[in-house]
Length: 83
Image (cartoon, rainbow, N blue to C red; front, side, top):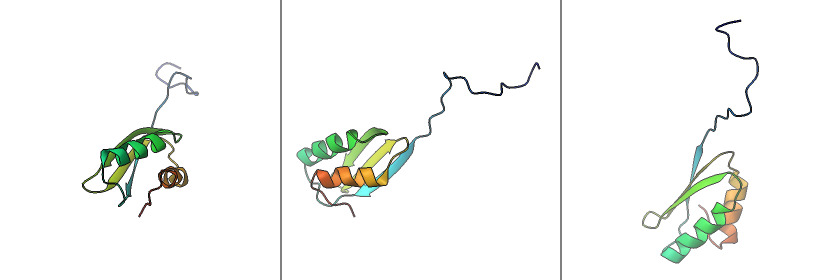
């Protein structure tokens, strides 16, 4: 069987597929807003990175198996609206 790949995937082998979700959040305007949004979204399962562009009023979330419902709920819990 030389040259043939194994019929199983070893446990140590993990291929992660990252996804990016972008939200427009018009209510963000300062560093406090940014911190609250980052903290809330950072607690959502699968989130690896959160970036906030205060000038464009855009929040970008990167991670794996992201739930739109959970992300929107985290932003709402921080008392911001998502467009």
